[in-house]
Length: 181
Image 1 (cartoon, helix red, strand yellow):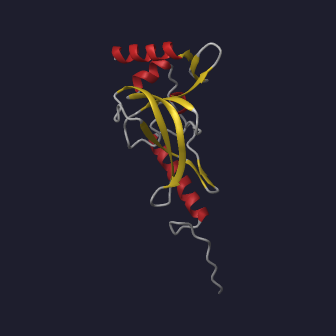
Image 2 (cartoon, rainbow, N blue to C red):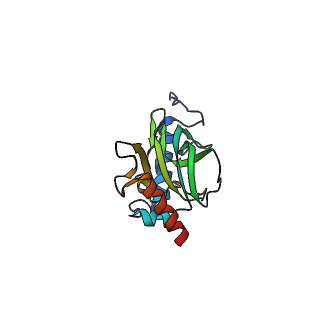
Image 3 (cartoon, one colour):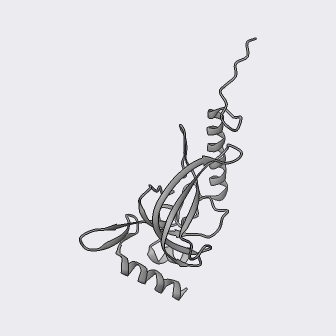
């Protein structure tokens, strides 16, 4: 009987086997935590109350890679931080890396439903949990990521699911809610 070997990736697994393992791991994890089909539907007040830390910055890099076992893909998003409020683990840091489950490596994608995507050069505000064990540390997933853009009116901080705010109103509201916790 002839023996055929499948091409192997960097972790000794065939690419299809890694993709299958990643998908099964993610599915099992999300089902076991009950996170597969629901996310919190929060307004700005709720986002601030659930977040440990609120960070504004510019995305300087987005890099996805396999974990050491070759079973899950993680994405590291590096921000140049321009402002942070709350109980940030790295308060005063110039840059911050946010690690999220999911991403694309070569021709394999691992998707976390509802997780926000970020692009280099994008200005964002993120509502974060400071728990390194979370698969996606952004509060309420895509609701916890706002984009920052300047227009004729001024600088707007916007999330299509939550609303749009001028920068001063946004940060004043965040500060007031944090002080009232």
